Length: 565
Image (cartoon, rainbow, N blue to C red; front, side, top):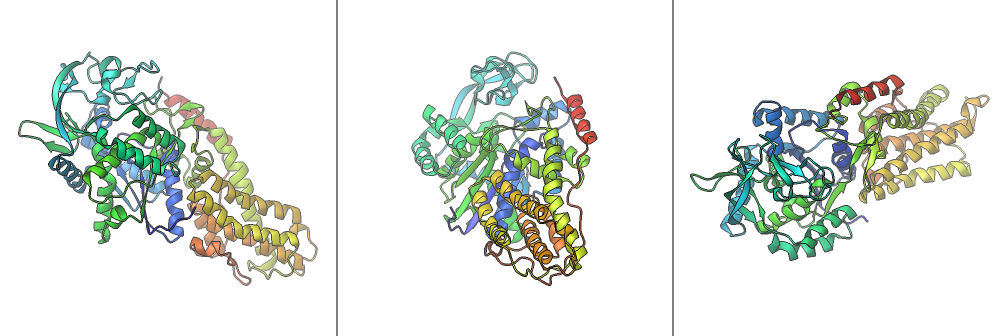
């Protein structure tokens, strides 16, 4: 599983700056990416973690209309909100950019100009829906109607949010303008097209090569598009908001958001490299660099077909994605999360309602991660997992271990003395755990990795409960007691080291309690003694707080009250 790799470029899908992020975004894209990157950093890998706000496209202009303001004010508002959410939640990108930056305009337009110059794209006049009342052309999201597949009554011109099928505006039944509600008419307009059909063979060979690495949903959806036969796709739009392209003095277009947004990964990397005063090219043009992309499943086609074709057509030595990771959807209280109906748990509101409990939400979302099928988040389960697992298992074991050693050995790690067969078995399991977690994380099985981590805490809890050191007579002179304390603290020490990818704040607290530094993963895997005899521990810190019934009821009422029918 572990192949030699000089560098990793890890990207997380650029969130639309048309609203805040919710727990579905975290579980689907940003938490798995963050766990993976934190692990790579601990492995001393050369890795960059890249993201940024997607500030163009129709959703931005639609939100501006809703809030009766300008697209620029919308993106400024939500870019700051999203960036702060990531920072406060503990997801740390090497660079979090935005597609309205000068560097992004320069890089994305350079791609367009070069493709144009090399004859890799072409002009074509076609008919597009036009709103006579609003006096403007209507790109896909400005059109709604009945889905031809599932008959959902308010599907958009690019995708049905009910069944997930990709659409074109012409396929909708009874198409209407989202601006005026009127019936649009077809009107001729000229656009630039990317001939995806010319890259059909390239893509088929490429995804066949990747089949053994890719998730079933990513491979299956990409293969489905290819089986239908690719068609040229317009990469310009008749809009006032976006990266401008001057085709002529009279014709001014903007780049289609799904042409320029993926290039945002590159422009964000260049922005980071300029700040660091280093060369960005090895992270995008070195064949030994692995490009790992974490996205939502509704973005598969853009990352597995359009973006690779852009890189191939540009032909400047760019690497192609080694992995495109797309989870399924996370539901909320057994209903699909919906931003339009305000059926969501917004991250910025969670951080306000549950201050200093980022790790609790991280734990629940990783445990319920929709990696292979849709999964569900509900507040009662949130409470149960926090109280029964984080508090009663992990927190309780750590607290008992620290309290016992403070009480019976002045907070000093004792010599283990004579180890029983059971003690030796446990110490052996401790040494194997990092390797097991490594295997899970490197195969993107983050839920299993978390279970493996928590199993170590369960072993510790069971060990203490069975040994009952608090019942021993003459504890100060009892050699067996010191053995138990030694073994228990080795488990605590390993938990402190392994917690960081999953529970970074908890890991920090544990390391402070133990007066330890964070070791590189390689050292942990080598099975070195983490807490040596004679080591003095620090003060005990409360790891987790119980979630009350009142807190849960408050969140459930809030959901019902905010929901739009």
